Image 1 (cartoon, rainbow, N blue to C red):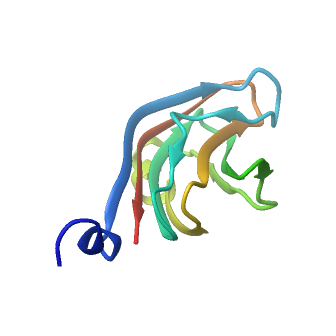
Image 2: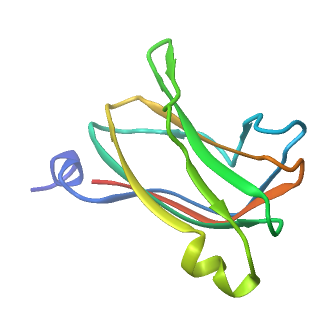
Length: 128
């Protein structure tokens, strides 16, 4: 196979964003995190990230999926709380999957409950 046929069946790195952060302007108000990602074909995206926030703060990661002119926001989020710097990699990393269609747009969002910063060291999105 050559050209687009071989690409359509392969895993594609859609995005690797590093050193992202938001400052929550009000408790539990979501802010865009990094840049949006346009999906080139139907499939499943796998999302992995490592992040942290202020000790004791609850940090929340979510996303908005735009399909045509409709925007969908999931009812569940990924939550992490820091208790020490040593636990960031172990406790504050996550992976999840989202089924997508060609031309969908994904925008990751974040907030926290303490009006402080939420940081994402690495955000990786692949399409399978």
